Image 1 (spheres, helix red, strand yellow):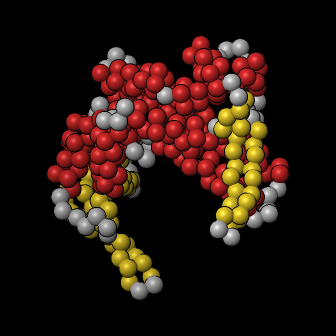
Image 2 (cartoon, one colour; image 1 turned 180 degrees about the horizontal axis):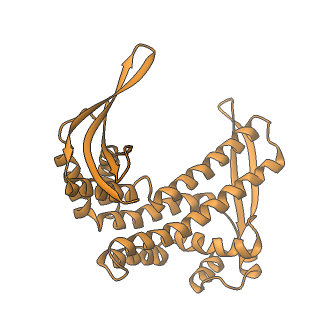
Image 3 (cartoon, one colour; image 1 turned 30 degrees about the vertical axis):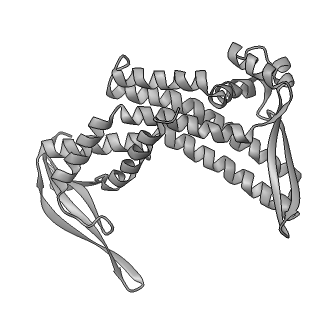
Length: 298
């Protein structure tokens, strides 16, 4: 059915704390023009793509899940509660982490292509950032191809060891995933030539855990360059929100777009409400600061 009229408004939903019964109130601020609505929605999309909805954030969440599982199993080991077969949960989290690494590259490329084009400066900057990590960071290039290895040889890419001991009268445990470079070379033919050289130079057992910690920094460095390639657009998005929304209390107020849609030959009015990403302004500002610091470190 054709839409006859759309009336858009800026409203503020305020969280109220009245004793033990929290409540909310909605206040109409003013009507919004179509250009203002479009500017707010575009700002929402950009800030969301770069923060909470970003492929990097998906990678970060999988990274956190992996180390949370590792810590849980280490705690059980230290306190004599370890169930051997539960250690396999670590490999499941590792599998998700390796998949999110591939997703970080593929989905970020897709987002850049959709917003700027496949031959854009932003795309070239991201490609160069990934090339830098592959050429200069063993953790990145190894983990990227470890995913391919695990797809052919199974998710249990090594041996999990968990050793409990006392330290200052407190039980502690160190849980590791141990790989053997020679076994990796002999059990898989499709390693990249650079990784073959890496593995030959190791020529022994080695732990995957410190490599994963270095991987996180490597991915953030690539994400930082991707983020900064859009800094002017981020600034414009923040300014659009602040100019249109005006004054509000960040800790209590949540600005929204309220759209009232009346339809031809219908008495009913369809209502929709869209939160404005004011919270993401405070999320992205420290990310940009960290990005500027990180890319200075080679």
